[in-house]
Image 1 (cartoon, rainbow, N blue to C red):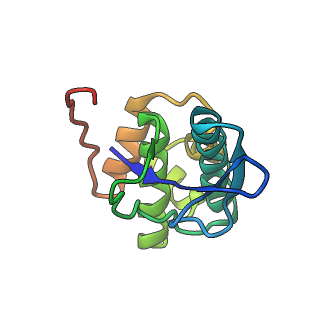
Image 2 (tube, rainbow, N blue to C red; image 1 turned 135 degrees about the vertical axis):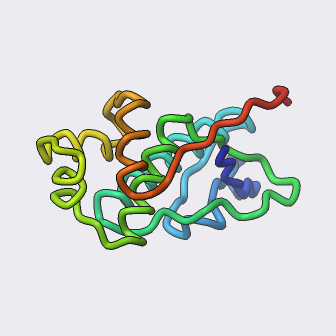
Length: 141
């Protein structure tokens, strides 16, 4: 799973400033701890979407080192893996669509973090890139 750490810093107006060591552009705030974590999670997902739209590599999470974290939803983590693999291999959406024998719009939807893609489609896309998705189950903290 991908757990991204957040830095929560008390601000001078009785709020918590939320930043991320992995996404320097991420800045938000919250009135209290849970509010800050919720806003941080929303901002993190927005940053990932922006990175993917711009064709930038989505960084792996840094070590939490005791900081609060935001866990990516499994589907989002799979989409990030597909996006980053395509970047590493320099495979375009058109190339992947040709390998899968599908319409390029289907690949665009697979890469859209807001689209509810099917896991079997992501499995097939990763397999076309010589990769496979691995999921593990752990005790909840």
